[in-house]
Length: 291
Image 1 (cartoon, rainbow, N blue to C red):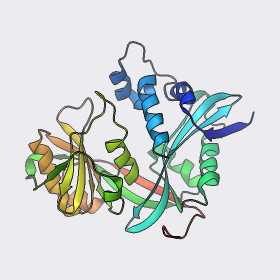
Image 2: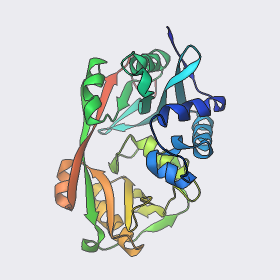
Image 3: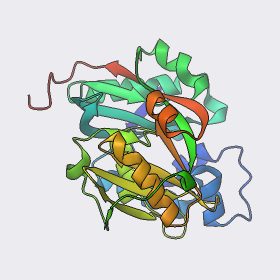
Image 4: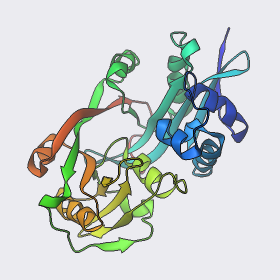
């Protein structure tokens, strides 16, 4: 059997759902409950919106097929943004999922290799934020750079005072793409912007507030199913993080969950939960964004 990897379309939604929901017991659950179980890929209603938004945004969703059956899915964000202060053209592998019945057959490798062939002359760097169990898999595929090794932390808001913020209804990517994502790098910078301002689901996934503080831009998002807690994203300067944590308290949140570098995490305090590395692989690509 040969593996065929191709760009996904809206006609593939049910096949994509079948990959992500294999082994899940979802009968009787609402759309919101399904989303909380495993994200937008758990139901037709949210997966259709997600894939459509992804395609309209010019991003790259892929499916892997065996004998015409979808057995794997991957989603890649394309962006230009700073990596440790250096502007780079990036492809970020945000999602990769293989049906449990077809794992160990090279599906994941085929998806990654297809991405490299398709984008190797368009981007400089392919990045991924792997789970702990997948680090070895990516190292075998040449992801030999650890770009970030940040800490997931939960910080009480009661210790901080809100800053002089300017709430905004929307933050354009052009306003933040040249800024470092200094808080909330759960994946890459564009991914976090996309999920905050593009990929929102009514009644399931929402934005509490976005705005500007000093030279930084922030987004606060309620954590679904976790009352009183918000996730924090901040593009700009680390000195503005305490003011936004305080702002979250003013909005009624008791704590924020975010990702910080080790030095900032120790300075801000809170409960450290785990490391979240982002690994990279250099591609042939362009030598600089202006090339």
